[in-house]
Image (cartoon, rainbow, N blue to C red; front, side, top):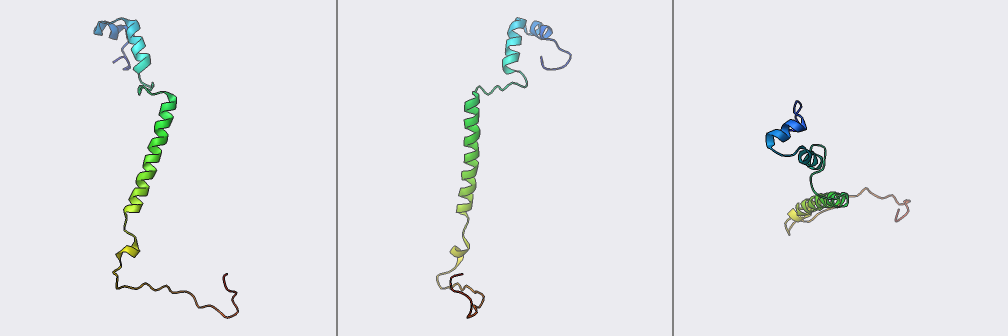
Length: 94
């Protein structure tokens, strides 16, 4: 109500039946544009870092939970790797 245009702090304080200085104090502490989370800057930075890490760990867990293509094969299947034919004059290990 105090933040709405057209209302002054004095008018709102009268309507609520409180002192205007108390209303100003509340407005500074909890008003729009202020961080009303109650955490210090260091705590907010720590929370940001932890949330970022939790997101990364969730992504890693999701990746690890996916079945790998090799786990779908039956025990009777054999995988074959095809490579390009090697020429005789190619050095070995390159």
